[in-house]
Length: 464
Image 1 (spheres, rainbow, N blue to C red):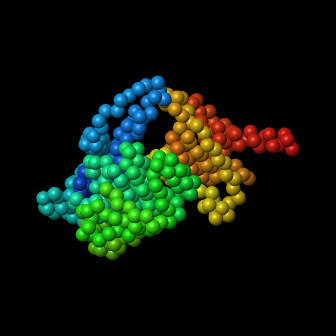
Image 2 (cartoon, rainbow, N blue to C red):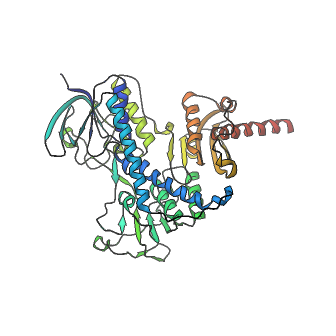
Image 3 (cartoon, helix red, strand yellow):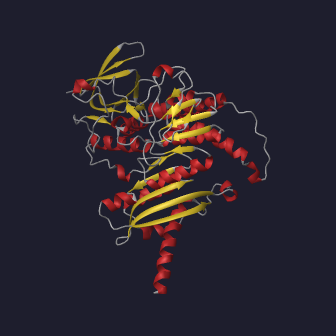
């Protein structure tokens, strides 16, 4: 059968844009369909939008601490509207860069709503409702996710999308949900002077991560003045009252009446308009896939948030690569454990490989190396104002193989990227410790951690 395209990618967010770019670079004919703006949630309502806001807040905080650098700065009036403008400029720049890349690679773009007609055909309704039928040998679904909680106009109870549009700093903010979104917003608004209470129903923050990460975030937020309640559930008032200032009964018996409430208790996949029922796929939850990112139809793939494996950009990128490699007939499989992940909280938290708990449960004999350093890097400011970095390495003593790495603090992503390279190439901790690094740098901190361990072993042998 003859098809118009070799691949149709539905959705241009983290996974979709990468899948389209990888496919085009491999010489495949690609159509990319986007309902709204190029870049999807990542550029406009997710990672980059929140990081742009956090960058503004961080510089605000740095100005307050300027006396450490021998400066005296009078803070000028800061307007949230100006910061929102910064967000929009960041999103526009990223969208423009992506558009140029897609055009250079010859990727065709259609704006509209895409609906599956069968495993090889898609109907695209443009913004004016005019339908167009297109076909492809393979279809990749990358439509992302949205907040599970839907807030209404003028509500005092918001989801993260609406929170980003909020132009005022509340006097008192209550956040329900201690995942990375809740923790990021808690840090942002506390830095701006709001009273913040954070509620999490599990026993630690960042519940899907290693406990080390959750504990470190707890201490950081608590030191900033955030009130944190763990193992706590809270009931929302009736929806008809959401436009008024609510009253919450917290689990410790205290009452809370916040100016705004952020609900950050999870996300749900954007699947309602995809026509999944026409190809026999489930329409009320995340799309199930195998390790090659294939759905029940081998030529229909689902990558990124829409499959619910892990709602992180790095995961979406990795899944895009697996899907394209599979389409090209190459051997590829997705294993979440070896994908480096980073949550851009304050401080950042990154991880790759096994945690101590996972490695022990799998029957590995392990040694855990842990070190906290005051990090000095190639950033000149760190010489004056070093930042704390905590590194935790899971090592198999007999083989000297690295099994996992978690890092919390400044440059955590750089540390974990280096560890992930060792995990994926089979580099032993002995070889890793022998690597020469730029001095000073964050990568050097990981090498020093291993070298310190070997120094201790050498001293213990001499003492014996």
